[in-house]
Length: 351
Image 1: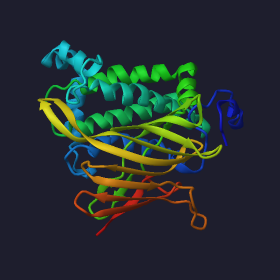
Image 2: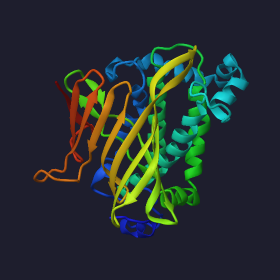
Image 3: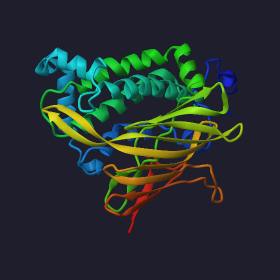
């Protein structure tokens, strides 16, 4: 098992491991390229008012429109003007949540996307794949392109969101985290990790449940040996503290805001409304074992995730989640670390 960058020799190579430890429990045990594509590619459905039925996404129109905008980036930008594009997507000047598209561009594409690229480069290398960085870059590109297609859905017209993401922030993120110095800072100083949910298919209504990519960071506090500053984010952001329980186990809590609803500002330009959110999380060696997230959002008022490895049932180490819908229904799901076919869990309604 890898625990630090210095123990990379355990896999027979000399390159350092800053994010992937090879753990067989918690959120790290669920890392898989297909699960990443599902969590990230359909992440926008967490805040979109559409149903979470992935079969109802207009992939053909979405892909055609995204590719048309990517093929004509200057025309797309000039539709609303370069000033609007730069201020909305690139330059951090506005604090209005309806206009600050640059915030997810920096946090989720530049930093999150860059870290994910490095994480999956290590994952592919650890599992013996050829050309791990190429494989990771391809996975990230598929994930982010799918995200744009799902968000676009049946819209036809100019939009600059895929241009900023796929032409600016995604390549910069991969370039940035190709640096060992940058990866070392985020991996060892900020203890950055992927704490994504356990996506599952709801058999009752064929919808995707409990999906979304999340990141966690912890920063040591010199005068507080057993405490760390804590930040947890995805389509949300919670700031709080981590309490070290021992050398391996940690309890974290944080409060903040979550994107609760996607709204259209102008043609081709979306924004979000915000809602209060809070969470309590327990991890071992920076691999998430349990989390309780509370917020008034589109789907759930709360969701509790118990990740594989906290306990076993015979030879199995399953993960579970239960969520309280806003319509007062419950949804329950189960995930296995090793399962045939698509690495997704199974969910069902509880009335």
